[in-house]
Amino acid sequence: MTYEPGDRVRVLPSAKPGHVRTPGYLKGKSGWVEALIGEFPNPEELAYGHSGLPERPLYKVGFLQADLWDDYEGPAEDYLYADVYEHWLEPFEGGST
Amino acid sequence: MSDHSHEEAGSGRTTSPYAARIRAIEALLLEKGVLTEPEVQDSISYMEARSPANGAKLVARAWMDEDFEELLLSDAKSAASQLGMKPEHPAEFVVVKNTPEVHNLIVCTLCSCYPRAVLGRPPDWYKSFAYRSRAVREPRAVMREFGFEPPEGVEVIVHDSTADVRYMVLPMRPTGTEGMDEEELAELVTRDSLVGVNVP
Image 1: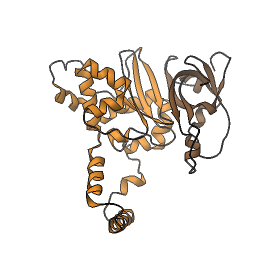
Image 2: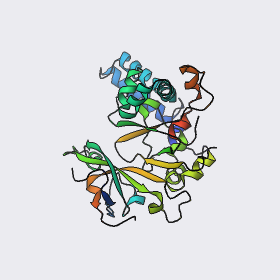
Image 3: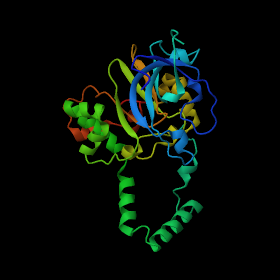
Image 4: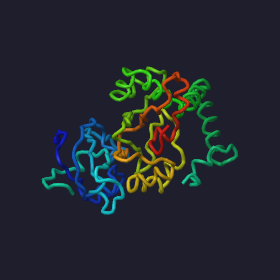
């Protein structure tokens, strides 16, 4: 496992074609690893009839809403969790955003 | 959002071409011995047993029993099995708890991931583009439209079920319900409160 809870990460901005489980609004955004959820067959492969093996680590990743949307209406403390596969993440050394 | 029409909503009509096709496929599978009548009936019973009432039972038990709440939050599948449900879907099932400090909201922006194994089919609005795009973008405005405004100082956490986990909210027990038994409490728990767009 590459990441530990608390690590800062960024979602890769890749425009990968096909069935991906990383929503567009998170691409290029930074957040923190909350927890490792487990390892699962890669859904991007499963969707096309492949085995999805080897299994890929899936993380629960937190993002401040203010980092996702410039004009977020709620308090600065509001945040969002998404489940992101390890191959969509890279280490991030900056501060917020 | 509730008037959003969806293909699936109309496919239950017995006269639809989809229903006719399914009946034909079912008849063939039975004729060729791939399936038996009892298997078909078991499957129908299983699908009909999945409903928001299951979520309400889990919540009411958690409100009554701290140990059960702990199990529900740490291993929701075991908790559901304990109450006779069959959360056998391969996806993980996770329950997140509302507190006086935190309110949770569930969405699946990519499609319509929902804890179907326990709660059955999601409501049509849950699958609508409007809900899926707005729940992450302006969750507080969406909740207001459902009639709920988190009190001052409460953080809103949105859970986008993007991959292999299905989420359900454990709402807070309403005040003034101290004298109620488990069955009465379960009746307070609405499907909307299990998604987090509202509270009991």
